[in-house]
Picture 1 (tube, one colour):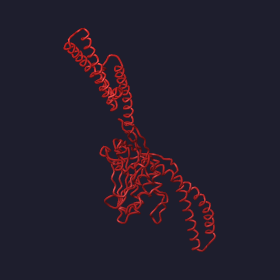
Picture 2: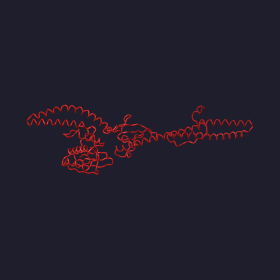
Picture 3: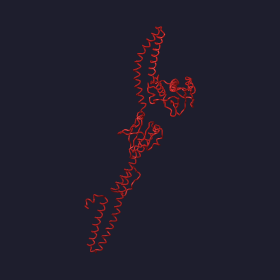
Picture 4: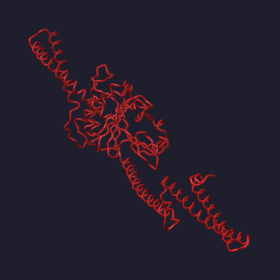
Amino acid sequence: MKINSLYHSSLERSLIGFALLSGTLAALGCYFIGQYFALSVVTSTVISSLFLAIYLKLFTRTYKKVINSFNRNHAHLDAILNEDYNQLVKPSYQAGSIHKLQQSLIELSEELFKKKSRYDQHVFLVYQLIEHFNVPIMVLDQHNKLSYANNAFSEFKQTQWQTLRYTSAEQLGLTKQGAHWQFSDVITAQQWQIRHSEFIEQGSCHQLIVMIDITSALRENQLQAWQQIIRVLGHEIRNSLTPVTAMAENLAVKLTEPRQVQALNVISERCNYLNEFVTRYGDINKPLTLNIVEIDTAAFLKQVCAIYPDVEFSCVTNATTFKADRTFIHQVMINLVKNAIEASIPPIKIALSVHNQGKVNCITIDDNGHGLANPDNIFVPFYTTKQQGQGIGLSFCRNVIEQHHGSLSLINKNKTQGVIATVLLPN
């Protein structure tokens, strides 16, 4: 083997080659010195062999110490790569290059440990913040499986997120197209948008998925569009109906034929109705001036039931009072009960209830009607399935309840026919 090849192949081979060469030369030197002093061949050979043995033993100890130092440094580097900063190497030498190398590794390990501690604190803070957000948030690991989520996500899935841990993104209804995540379900995608970012935890890339409910934004855009339409239509209808009403009333006074007078009265009545309709719908989404008072629950339900004597009501309550604007909440109840009656066939049975549920009072109207044909469109202005319907009653009711900082929902019953309307009002 060439000398250059020997010294460039590896440190171990270089050291061994150097030791054998230098030891052999030193042993030969001892032999020739013995011959120079006229020692016998046997004596010179013994002295040379003894010298070579001592030399090799010292070299072996030094070789092992050097190689062990590099092996320990290699193990230390492996520990650093695996983010194990507690494994510190005790310096093999008190000075020199290897000592400096080991001291540098120790300082690097300590510095990385400090940075990791700060990063872990930041990650822990992120998880704490995630827990307190009221929007669904989930964390996907490097394999795109659920590793963490918050309570809002549990409410979104209607199950504890821990039961879904390690569930794949596909099973959670998520797909990734390019660099963007989205819902695979079209209906869910219409209601929710996804914002995501990446972060590194324990050396692996994780996905932070934030779900944003865009229903309110879509509703706001929808309302603005309808309000613009109403402003234009209302202006044109009022300009047209006002003179028609005036002419019909004037002609009705002058004419004597009963049928003609009746026809003009019908025209006048319908014009007034249309004016009232436009005015009423134009005010649906305007801010209301609410007078919040404490309402006696039993008396309130009794008033509502008295309006419809032909309906069989059943009333259940555990709340003696609740807070709302008396006039507006009464109108909301009338509209909801009227819808329930119109959706039912005799004998009409409606269950009313008012229950306190911690920070909210829950009012429900439970009917035995035919149910909702298209639940997704019930709050869309002008949408109605009734032949004589206007499609503004539920929009009005929801607007009133939301200005009370509450909510209104209508769902079909699962096991029997009918709808449950639920009004939530803050205490």
